[in-house]
Image (cartoon, rainbow, N blue to C red):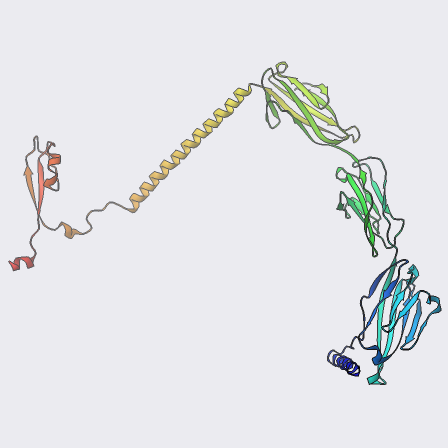
Length: 438
C-alpha cells in the first residue's frame, strides 16, 4: 500500500513539473446533469488517489438560479455534517465524496460546487486544493402536445391567414417543431414563428399550404413526441386550364375533325372547389354561349369549315377565372394525313438527292486532288532508252497512215487496221569490254 501511494505521488509530481498543471486528483464524469423532477440524481466523483493515502477536508455547496449559495455538506475523512434543511434529501457517498440528491424539485436546479483540501501523508504540511463545479437542470417530462388552428374552417388563398398553436399540459424547457406532411417547416416570407416556436402564423395562405400539420415537442429528459395530425384545407384556383378531346387530330390549339363526325371536348382545371364552366363560340362579329359544364358536344355537319371556341372556368369561392381558346377545323383527316405523307416523301426525296450530290462532288474533289498530287510522268531514267532504233515498214491493206507500235508481237492484233505499220527495232551496242574480249 505504501508503494502505491508513493507511485501516485511521484506520477503527480512529474506531471506537475513537466506540464506546469496540477495532477487531476479527482474526476467529474460530466459537468452538466439533466435531472428529472421527482427522480434521484447522483453527482458522481472519481478519486484518482488511494483515500487512505491522505487527509481530506471538503464541502459541497449549492448556488441556485438567483445566485444564493448554501453549504450542503461539510466533511473530512472521519465525519460529515449535512445541512439540516437538506438532511432528508441528501446522501453523501464516502470515501469518494459523491453526492446523491433525492426527489428532485425545481429548487434543486443550479450549480453544485465541490471543494477539497488534500494532504498526503508523505507530504506533511503541503495541502492540495481541488474544486469542481456541476450544472444541474431539473425538468418535467413533456406530455403529448395538442395543436389548435384558427380559423378552424376552410380558408381562401391570398385572402386569409392561419394561426397554429401548440401546447402541452406538462413539461419544462419544451422545444417545439412544426411539420407539414412530415416535412420540417422553417421561417420564410410567409411562415412566422414565435420565439419559442409554439405558435406558427401563415400569412397569407396559398394552395401549397394545404396538407396535414403536426407539432413535435421534446426537452432534455423526454424523447420527441408528436401531436395528432390536423388537416388544412384551402380554396384555390383555377390553375392549368386545358381543353382535351380523344377524337380528331390535334395540332397545338387546332383540332381537325372529319365532316359528319360527332366530337366531344372536355375542359379541366385544378381548383377547389370544382369550377363552373362555360363554352363560348367566337366569331369576328359576336360571341355566343353554347353550353355550361365541363363537356362540350359538337356536330361537325352543323359547323362552318373553321370555327373558334373558348372554355371559361370560374371558381365561385375564390372569384378567379381562366380561359382556354381553340380552333375547330372540319376537313377530311385522310386528306390531311396524305398531305403530311406527301410532304414527308418530298422531304425524303430531297434528302436523298442532297446525299447523292454530296457524294458525287466529294468523289470529284478527291479525284482532282489525286491528279494534282500525282501528275503523269515518263521514264525517270533516260539510260533505259539508250540504243539505235530502226523503223521497218510493213505494208497495210489501204492507204498508209502513220502509226507506231512497240513490237512485232502486237502486229497480229492490229493487222486489220488500214494503215502502214512501222515496227521499231532497237539495237543495243555491245559494251567496250565485250568487244575487246572478242
